[in-house]
Length: 440
Image 1 (spheres, rainbow, N blue to C red):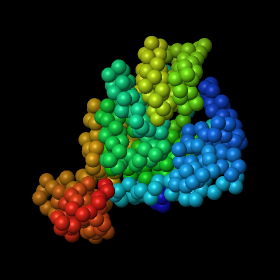
Image 2: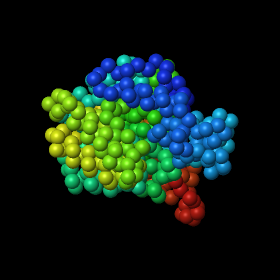
Image 3: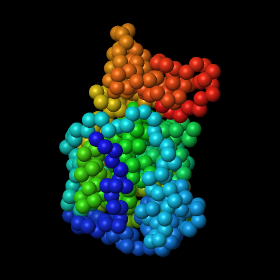
Image 4: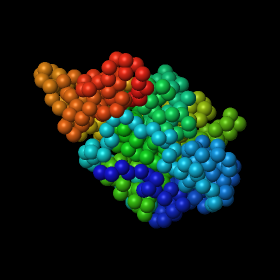
């Protein structure tokens, strides 16, 4: 399977109107579609671009990696988003370089089997956008957070854990956005935050890497947790049949998740405006005819905003509690068992978790070793890896030559043969001491 990027699969919002029709359910989905189409044809009214709002810059202006329009190298250089730059503007590095040349360590995920398991829809053409907009069980609300983790996410986790201990939410993880650094690079600490999310029982889902790359996010989450998600939310909430996105996501085995309750928090991200986001949620949840006996909600917020993480979320969770809604993950609100939410890190292994939500095959600093490695260790025999993982009595060789890195993956560079090398042609101590290592 070749690497699939949403950059190639999606024409983003420039063609989002193709085949778009209103969702048939009695929820304001048509408003979402209308808004996506409006943004696709609207020049940015406030100098923001890309990111969660989808606006395009005026002519000759570049859309920077941080989502602002401008004409200097700060905007048109590294991380510039060509897809959202104005006519006549040229990113000097192009969209494809916005990851800064970083690639998550370890083998790619292209060979991981992707059976479509469970009863939850993997594709739904009825909306034109292709995906799931609502929960299945009355009395439940699935709170979702896009674009994190970020500097407010850990505080958000602790707030939920202490004030709403029975609540579970879903985080749609973006791997390397808004200048935060790669999520699987330990120097930034995001791996610990993501591990805490999972250990606290929340669902981990994908919102891609730099807003489009799926495989890189899979590799990064695999490096942190030992597995990667089967649930995703597409960039800018657009995944159409006409663009080929629906087919690509189905081939990769992803449920495409949207929402039917939009707090509009990214447009209400200041202390002066956040009350408007609260009003949006309250008005939707307390609308005539809405009650836990007949209604459910799939709501979207963004934990990259301080007001969302430290103010709005507490209000929404308090309101949900007051009205009698149970706060659950997207998987639970769709009736999908947790075993179906993730794929194992390598072919032949399987995902498992404890009842408390902590991964039994992961840690915050390494990818899990395959089940074959554990079996070999127990038997005392030495075997050659068949999937690129190594450690214990599993050694590198055959199709995966070289050194076994400190994180349990085979390779031939100093990242694998340097500091922490477990077996193979490891470098000498002196050489290791001069080696700058990345996660391998």
